Image (cartoon, rainbow, N blue to C red; front, side, top):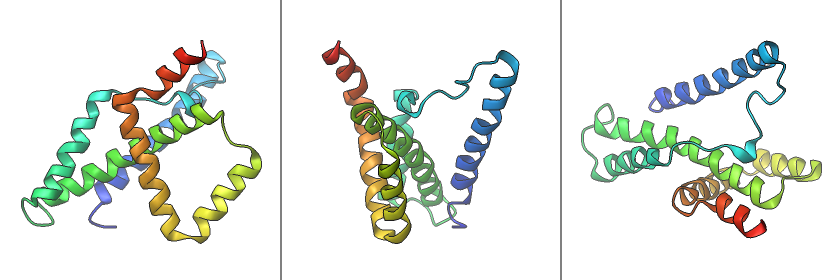
Length: 145
């Protein structure tokens, strides 16, 4: 965990900013959609090159753990978390969301099977990266319209 501390700090900081943004928007304008629904989460598609650069630093293995490899690991962890969130947004958009039973089953599965956490996060991250090029939500929206 100490090797990826900068990435974890960045993820925690973004989560904290999101939590702080919601009451600010709620109190200043009275809008209850300060963050918006998860199914609409997206960010700039050009950030995929940051993820690819981190993967390249890992594959090429430049430097020791504090050099290019450390930067590569932190970049992949940080961008991987963002792409996992984007992949969850795509899945929520396509499936229409989860029921309460679905949330409970996912939480139990992720709590009791550690390997499942890695597999699910990797799969959801791949869906998020695929959405960068395929733009699944836009295609589904045009097909249903």
